[in-house]
Every structure is written in structure tokens, then in C-alpha cells.
Amino acid sequence: MRHRRHGVILLDVILAAIVLALGLTIIVSLSTQSLARQIEGEHRMTASWLADELLSLILVEGPVDYSNAHPGSGRFDPPFEDYSWEVNIQHIGDWEPYIVDATILWNARSGPTSLTVNTRIAMRQGEEEEVLPREPLEPLDRESRYYDDEEDGG
Image (cartoon, rainbow, N blue to C red; front, side):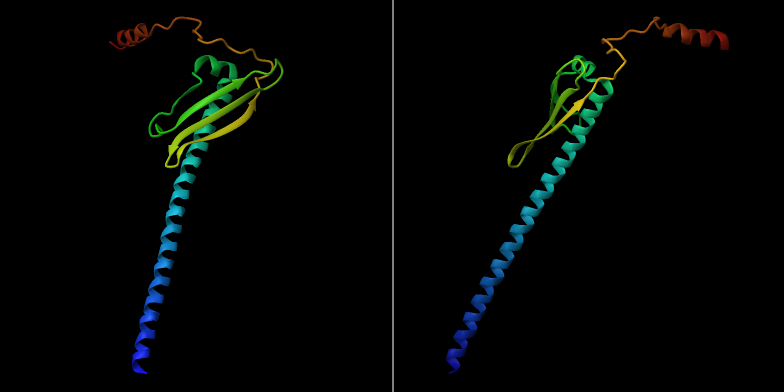
């Protein structure tokens, strides 16, 4: 009777070790997936901030001036050099707002990933779009400005 009990205890220990190993495997797997999703979320949040900044620049400069002054794609400055952007501005009609697509691209562990924001931006009514580049009405003579200050003080 005593020998049978030792066999049952050994079987209990083996089963407990298997259950413990399965539990630890599940915990490690879940924590790895959680960390990967957190990193993906950080990338998406950064991409959304960069898209907002890009669209705000288009809104401030106006769709026509932005198209004339900036390229349609590029890379962001450090510390966001891992992100690139593409902008597509479509003119529908004279009184229709421009359709603006801003795409932010980055490389994730799973491969190239992107975030696209679509919006419409209208021209300011009553104002004509300025043609770039703008020049001042009178030329600036900065050197005489500095020399006049020295002569007056001396």
C-alpha cells in the first residue's frame, strides 16, 4: 500500500509542473503581446500628432500656397526621422473645398505601416491667394541701420 502512494505523489508533482509550465507560458505570451500592442499604440499616437501638425501647416498656409512651396512627400526632422509623409491635395472646383489626404508612414516590426487622414480645407473667402515668393515693398538696408547707431552713440 505504501508503494502505491509514492506513485500517486509523483504523478501529482508531474501534473502540477505541467499546469505551472502552461500557466507561465500563457503569462509570458500575453505580456509579449501586450508590449507589442503598446509599442504599436505609441507609433500610431506619434503618427497622429505628426499628421495633425502637417494638416495645421496646410490650413495656415492655404492649400494653394502649400502646394507651391512644399514637395508632396518627405521625411520628418529629428527626433521623428523614422516617420515620412505624403500629402495629396485635390482641387474640385472654384467654390469647393480642397480634398487633402495626409499619410504618415513608418516601419514597424510587422512591416511598413501607415496612417492616413482625409479632410477638406477651404480657401479663405474674399481673399486672393498670394503668389509665392513675396518680396518686401522696400529693400532693407541692414548695414546702414547698424552703422547709424554707432555714429549716433560716438
